[in-house]
Image 1 (cartoon, rainbow, N blue to C red):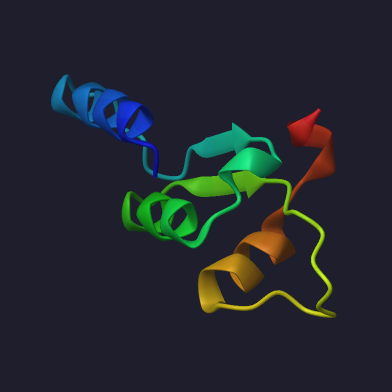
Image 2: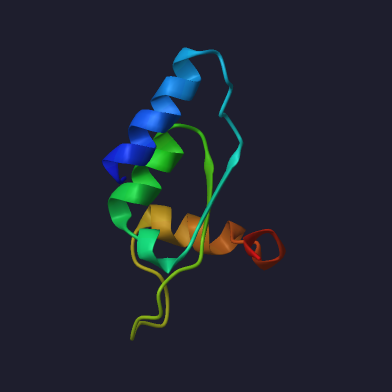
Length: 76
């Protein structure tokens, strides 16, 4: 995950803000393996629109999981 967001989220957790089961909404630029892994490690739900690839299905367990729970109404 991009360092600036990771440090911000860690600061919020340090001050007692519970981020578990909160939604992290981002655009296609954040569609990366490390981003999905760190969000799931922090018990957050990624709502990241995935980039179009020339594959029929998403590759990787975190990417597949995020593709299933993506909510377009929250994304807008």
